Length: 275
Ligand SMILES: C[S@@+](CC[C@H](N)C(=O)[O-])C[C@H]1O[C@@H](n2cnc3c(N)ncnc32)[C@H](O)[C@@H]1O
Image (cartoon, rainbow, N blue to C red):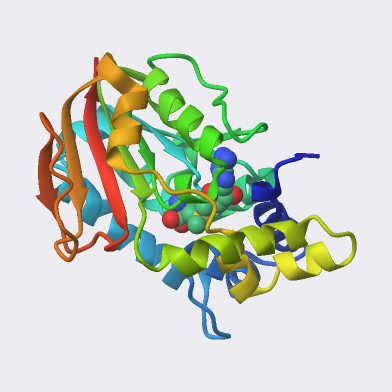
């Protein structure tokens, strides 16, 4: 059993997902942990449709879309139950979906079986929350969305280095981060309190499944561009940052900065070539 408090809501949601009969039920019960949508009318088809839209929008915005993908391997870090993975399997020759929670990866297989290309999917559990069980240089693209903000700070940086390690020289990384905003004056301490509650016997597992509490407890990690770029040093080149048009530029030397309306104002993406 993992000792990281940060893993509690994911394993709680993963266990809840195991107890559902169908993936439609999983989406109704735990789908909110992936895209914050709730309601009895939800089903897997609508859930995957949100992923279909986002995969194409992001890859296009990052200049990474195109027919070459059909010959390429993608590593997706934090795939969850396959909201985006189904779409990726229809674009790439091979997709390696990685997640902390093995139950999510089981559901990811079901999602891809229904809505993607299951013969192109491989799954890989991230047992310690910080290392990928994948050979160096395997991927043409390593992709990570709304995951690094939920990890322990050191684990997030370790996963960033892992994303670069598993990507071939000349391949790309597209990694999503959340950075500091004014709202963190409230969110940050509240998150610490909730993560403390997750540790309590009996109460902890109950709190971990409550939407509002879980969302506060997720406020686990913020990474600003300078810290991530400092951690990667010369391992990447052609470094680009993609941010929301609603936020001020980061203005880092030697970094190309663009904005895209699909990026949340507290988020930013690192899009870079691996050396
Ligand atoms: C908000 S969900 C996003 C899932 C997916 N990217 C999407 O957009 O639907 C975050 C995912 O990251 C996974 N996760 C959290 N911490 C992780 C870690 N340290 N290593 C690997 N996966 C992790 C969770 O289990 C969860 O599936």
